[in-house]
Image 1 (cartoon, rainbow, N blue to C red):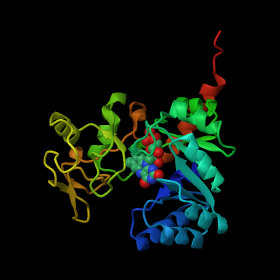
Image 2 (cartoon, rainbow, N blue to C red; image 1 turned 90 degrees about the horizontal axis):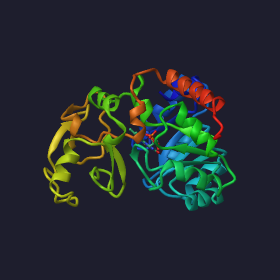
Image 3 (tube, helix red, strand yellow; image 1 turned 60 degrees about the vertical axis):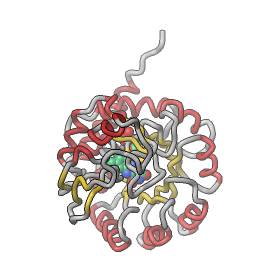
Length: 303
Ligand SMILES: Cc1cc2nc3c(=O)[nH]c(=O)nc-3n(C[C@H](O)[C@H](O)[C@H](O)COP(=O)(O)O)c2cc1C
């Protein structure tokens, strides 16, 4: 998907941080072999990250995209090796800290975003606040799923957009069919932000996902804290490699997952209502770009 996005004129971001180091390097090398274009490798700095960063340096990647808290040492390591640094933040003060620490680009992630969500400010309010605070390019993330939303983000001062949920409905996304169908069917109010619902394997990390039997069962019992939730520890399925998936586990159901996929963490942003058709990653990049251009050209005056 990253290679396809890059070849279509986008800038792909490759999330490898959760992989064992050998797989991290192999997938990075494979992506480099599939496209000559620049892309970034996404690294979670709340985990041990130095070996991963070193591999990015050895492979001369164009940039690293760092997230989950400002880690000055990671920025120093990447910058001193000549890599560009994209930093994901959730508010303006953090954006300023990242800029001062040497980041090249800010990724401002609004609360509408799917997956793990660092901040609590909506994209509409966050982007101008961040743009007014830093002097480096700001990329808008969260709830942006079509060209109209991209145009709006550019009007707010963003230099580009970062799109997640929309690409779940691409042919290249290796997610389970049940998960993809839920994305295609969901209206905009079918996602929910949770402080710690899917906390098994990744605690203390708020997230946004589709409502399902797991979230409904948890609400029905009064939204209890971890340790007191219904069916805690229950095995609800298995990964393709046979490892169990627990209820409340932070897990992206990929192709080959078995069991009650619908009850797993189905990450989704609020822009999901604009995701109605499976397309190639290249078609998605192209459509968003063209529709943004049209929206900007058709901008109406207020009077
Ligand atoms: C399935 C899924 C997985 C994600 N995984 C990561 C990740 O590994 N690293 C990261 O920085 N952000 C991750 N995100 C968050 C995205 O980077 C981005 O902030 C978000 O998708 C933007 O909002 P949108 O989903 O409304 O487009 C993920 C999002 C989704 C939907």
